[in-house]
Every structure is written in structure tokens, then in C-alpha cells.
Image (cartoon, rainbow, N blue to C red):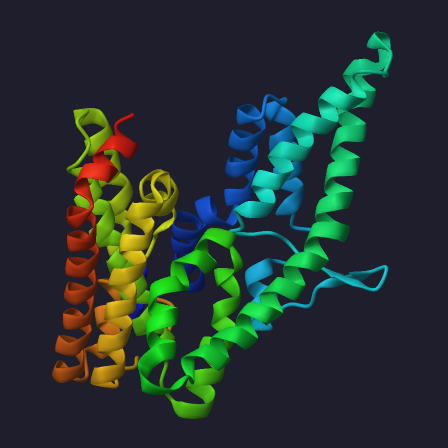
Length: 329
């Protein structure tokens, strides 16, 4: 709704825009808190400690990861390392959950029981946060730079190969939580060429996974699981794929790979059409707003979505026998 109003030129005051941001961004900005809680509980640790560390990962004292990625903020510099928040990240929060559970149990082995209530949580939080900020952080920064440089290199590959690779594998970047850095590449493309092909390719990748997820949903024998799978897939229509990826497709690599194939075919269609957006920030159905000035381009955009969806759907159906056994165990 916010994207629609902005693209239609509806004037929105700063106060109302702030309200929109609260509704649209809160859950994803604080995603590490939710993931850290769930992971800590799953690994057998104290989920409250997981929540505390998760909150520290997105603390307002740390520069916002999205703002740093877009150049609107600068990271902190400690011990020669660049430190920023973990807004929207997933894997770091899972690692936090694992560390909290392991460290808590380890400290409890030698911390006297009368001091356990204070000392064990304190040590667990300090050690976990230190490792996340000063060890995991630099590793992720290196990975982030590698991803950005690789994307620029891959997309420029001849004969549509780069388009197919990015269209197929873009959702892998989402899984790692590094996708917030893609805005740097998109801004660079818009500044140099006036076009943003990553918007189309990202949508193709989503459509492939969406098709695979919908096909897989109807393979569940349990009606509740089927309903949950469809519910997890629906947000993809609005450019949100985390529920689909972690709730459906990653439960079976056959489903996920089917989505990859669909996205790759959609990427090739993008190359054939020579299609690119003139903006950024919205994908899938809201992304139609970026093509309102060119009906032909809009029809090509819809065709890319349909083809990627159908291919992902069909690939799952081809393997339905094996997938049914995997997801209904």
C-alpha cells in the first residue's frame, strides 16, 4: 500500500510515513530477535537470553545495517573493524541461538549455584555478543563485498548466463540475510544506466520459488500443513519470501532446486526481453508500478513472472513422488 501511494504521487507527510514504516519495517528490522529466540529455544538454551542478545544485535546504538548499506550512515570503528547492526539478518541470529545454548550450559558446569542467576547470563551474553560483533561481523563483511562484486561480474556474463544464474540463485542471498546490500548494486545501476535489471531478476527468482511452494503445498496430506504452506507462500506476491523459504521450500532441497530452475528460466526470459526497471524497492505485484509508463514492458514483466512460476510448479510436479515422501514423513 505504501509503495502504491508513493508511486501514484500521493503526498504523505513525514508523520504518516513514519507510521507506515512502523507497520512495514518493524518485524523485519527486529527479525534477529525473533530468530534468536526461536533458535535458542530449539537448541535447548534460555530463550530470554536469546532475546536479549537479539535485541543487542539491532540496538539503536549500532548504525542501522540498511542505512549503512545505502550510504546514509557510517559504521562504528572498533579495533580496526567496522561494526553495524544486523537488521533483517537470519544466519547470524541462528548462530547466536546456538552460541547462547552452548555457552550457557558450559558456564553452568563451573559457576557456583549461588552465583548462577547473575554470572551465567552475564558471561553468556558478553561472550556471545563479542563473538558476533568482532568475529562473525568481519566475516560477513567480507562475504558481503564478495557477493556484491560477484553479482556485478555475473550479471555481465554473455548469452544471458549471468541473468540465469542471478535469477536462479538470488534467493540464496536472501537466506543468508545479505540481500540488504543489493541496494548498493541497484543504486549503481540506476546511476550509470538509468535501469535496474536486478528488480526483474529478483522478481523472477521469487516467482520460481513461489511456483515450487504452491505445487509443494498441495502435496501435503495434512490439511493444516497444506494451509500453513499456502499462507507462508502468499507474502511472496508482495516481495516477502522469508516465510516461504524457511516454512516450505527449504524443508526439501528438491522443492528449493525446483524454484531455482524456475527463477533461472525467468532470468533467461528477462535477457531475451532485455527488460529492466526504472526504479527499485518493490518487486513482484507491487513492482508492476515501476512499469506503468510502458504497457509493453509491463506485459513482459508479467510474462517473466508467469513463466518462472509455471516452471517452478512443473518441476515440483515432476518429482512429486519423492517430494511427497520427504514432506509427509
